[in-house]
Amino acid sequence: AAYVRIIVEGLKKHGYYAEKITPKFISDVVRSAPLHDVGKINISDEVLNKPGKLTAEEFEIMKTHTTAGKHIIEHVISTVQGDSYLKEARNMAAYHHERWDGKGYPEGLHGEVIPLAARIMAVADVFDALTSPRVYKPAFPLEKALSIIEEGKGTQFDPKCVEVFFDAMDEVKIVLRKYNQTDIT
Image 1 (cartoon, helix red, strand yellow):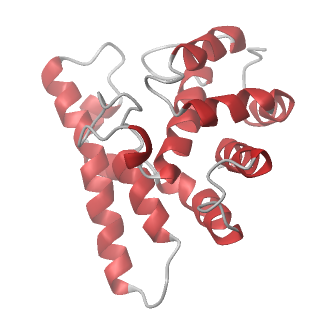
Image 2 (image 1 turned 120 degrees about the horizontal axis):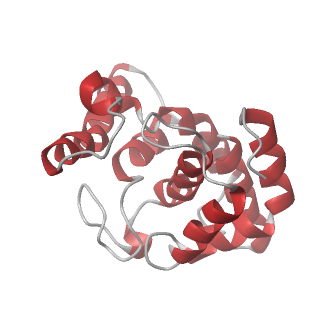
């Protein structure tokens, strides 16, 4: 959520997507960010916590967390009254693995067809995954993680989201130090 806040506030500051980035949108995406992987509750622990590389079959199973998350959040939305921040949570859960170049999943969306909240989440999620230890890998050093994000600019990620993320590197480093148990900077 902290990285999402940095990106969405950077987009606003630069005047990018001005028609979309309202105070409500900012609040909704920041509040929704922790729900982006809710669909992983449908993935078996054997796949979710596998220490090595996933097989093609296991990766296909893992990819279902996006549609599962979308369905879970849609069910919640249908049970609550009024305009809900969960609409952005649904977009983030469903589409945070879509790619700017259309080669992502689950639907192969591309560019600005991908909901803005999901494009923001994609950068935040990948950076967090790269800089955090996982059962299958150690945390990457900051420079390596930033290099990977930069390489994905315009192919995997919305270039404007990457631009504002890099512009706010001092803030990014503060968040990284606050939440990361290892010193990777």
